[in-house]
Structures are given as C-alpha cells and as structure tokens.
Image 1: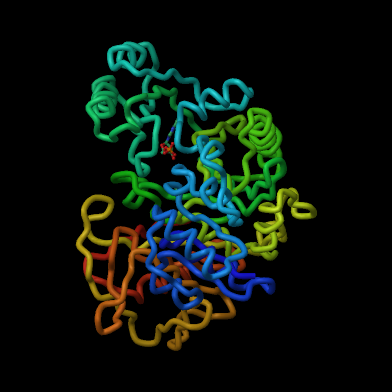
Image 2: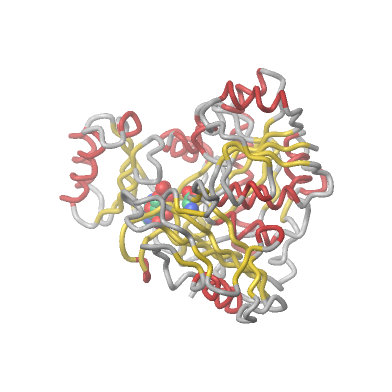
Length: 441
Ligand code: AMP
Ligand code: GLY
C-alpha cells in the first residue's frame, strides 16, 4: 500500500513512523512533511489547505489511503473533497468534524444525547453572556465557538476577567470563531486524553494519555499547544475507561450516526474525571493530539495501518475495543518532552542551528543513539520526532517554528522513560530552547 500523510508536525512524524513499520505499507508520502519525516517518507511541499494540489498528488502517486493529521483541513472538508473525487481518505467528514470546529454544536449534541459535560449557556450577544457569567460561581470558563488554534478558551477566576474574555471574543480577537461564546462551569478532577479510531459505528482505543498544556514547570505560564505528554495516563483505571466507553464514546458514535454524521476517523476525547471517578467531556477533537500522539503510538503493539485501513473500510472487525499495547500488558510507559523555540507560544525567532552533543546521533527509524552509553538502549528507546525544523542551504538542521522537537522515550516504567527522555533533551541544543523539566514527574 501507498499511504499519504497530511501535516508537518511531531504528530505526523509519529504517524509516519508507525505506518511505515506496517508490513502492508510499501511507501509513505507526506505533504508537506519536515526533515525528520523525510527520512522515512517521501515529502512534497504541498500545503495542508491546498486540496486541489493534495488530491492531484494522491492521484498521480497512486495513493491507496490518505491520513489527515491536523484539524484545519478536516474542518474545511478535505475528506468530502477527496471522497467526491473517488480518493480514499481516513478522517471525519466536515459534518462529523463539527464536534471539534463548533463547540456550540458539541455542547448541544452532548446535552441531547445525555453525555456528561460541564453545564453551559451559549450567546451571540455580549450583554447576555456577561449577565449570565455573573449568575455562575467562579471560576468559570469562556470559550469561543470555533477553531482558535487552542487559544479560544479562558479559565477565569474573577468576573472582570470573564468580561475581558467575553469582550475579546466579541471584539473579534478570534475572528468568526468568536461570534458565538460559550460560558461554561468549571470542572474539577484530573484531565485525561483518550483517542479512538472510529469506523462510523465502532471504535478501537489507543493507549490513554495526559498532556501538559502550560508552558512552564508546575503548570505555570501561558497555555500552549502542549509541552509534553505521558502515556498511559497514571490516574486512569480499567473501571474509569469502561465508564468513558459506555457513557461517552458509545453514545457519541451512536448519536452522530443517527443524526446523519457518522464519525469515521480519529476521535480525541479531552476529559475531566471528578473525585467520584465520573468522566466528563471537556472537548472533542476530530484528530489525534499533539504531543500525545508521540507518546501514545510507540506503545501500540499492533499494526496501526491495519487498524486505520479497517476503520476506513467501515468495519474495525477484530480491532474493536482496547487495542493491544504495552499499556495493556502492563509493561510499558512513555513520555514525550517538547523542545520549543524562544518566545513560544507567542512570536518566535526561527533559524537557530540545532546541535547534538558529542556521542548523540540519529539512527534508523528516528531513534536516537548515544555512543557515550548515558542512554542505555536496553533500558529505553528514545525517538526524536521533528516538528518546527528545516534544513538550511548547507543541509544543517535549524529551527522553524514554535514547537521544534518532541523527544519521546519508551521504557519499562514511567520513571525510566522520564530519565532517558531528559538525558536526550539535555544533549540537544539550540539558542533559546525552552522545555519543561517536570513532564511526568
Ligand atoms: P480546550 O481547548 O477546550 O481543551 O480547553 C483548554 C483547557 O482548558 C483544557 O485542557 C482544560 O484544562 C481547561 N478547560 C476547558 N474547559 C474546562 C472546564 N469546563 N472546566 C475546567 N477546565 C476546563
Ligand atoms: N495537545 C492538545 C491538542 O492536540 O489539542
């Protein structure tokens, strides 16, 4: 099979690696990709929103299946576009991806279907949103309805801050995405990310994860796309996971199908589990998480491509339920640490040379090899996933974006994984690098 992956981040690098290891896959392509992905896939500089260019590429290269990484092309209907042209693609249709691109739709859907989530109200008039906010107990959560690159959510502790967040939406900070505003009660508990591969009716579960959204240690600083992740989520139990399946995942897939939007593709459940161990949906995403994917996929002990292929055919068959992984066998744990550019998550300076300390090198399948013996290959497998990188004219690796590298380590337990990941992080350098030092700790 010939597989095309759309995207250029760490998540797409992890997808490309897992898919390239399948015995069914002859060649992987990626648009636009990055220097890391280009070591395992043939990359072509076609942008993710150039549907005509991408579908032409898929046709010319006889692609058997296209897999979409990021939310943007999904919300703009890339799946519908490919399918209308007879091209096979894995992801939700524009209608089904509405679970992510309209928080209002998602909230109303959950209410209709009895899926547990925070109490809320939605407003298209600022005065009404502000008045409602005063009626709720602090803290509260203000959300722009549409996609806002992860920045459309404000958790506020004062009514003044709530007014500020509401005004930001109605004053156009998030463009069209902020014309409708959700005011939501604050949920407490622990956060978990659960990923499902869906075939329109059934699902297969990937290992669970926890991501670290704040920039700085001890969950301080601004929200980011994610500064690290661990898998499995240490607070998750089989009992809680069962509740998530029965109370959330099953009614979501049943509801979407009944409402004429059958959900095919990766589904990401952002969850809060309260102190009574009851799960609630914080958000749905129509894709895999970044950086959770970089921690989750290396743990999988089955052929990811086969799972995706079955789902895209509309029948997961024997993959239904929890997929076999190091998590299920109780042996494995993984961690992913993001190395970001100076200035991230705001404006960043690109073009910083990325250097490895003596002894560290890149081996096969994006694995890091340490000849100094500091990182013991018997103890941990360390993988370098690239995101905001490019090659300069002398073919040296330089930074090109906010989140630059994801260092993922897989080991027998989380402690060993953390140690190995940080040993590698400390051997990689670029000017202004930022990383949290407490991922998983
Ligand atoms: P979202 O973009 O919807 O994932 O929101 C970003 C982050 O805000 C989440 O990961 C949570 O940490 C937090 N958040 C969003 N909604 C709520 C809520 N209702 N209660 C508590 N925290 C929330
Ligand atoms: N890590 C959070 C996200 O991908 O949305």
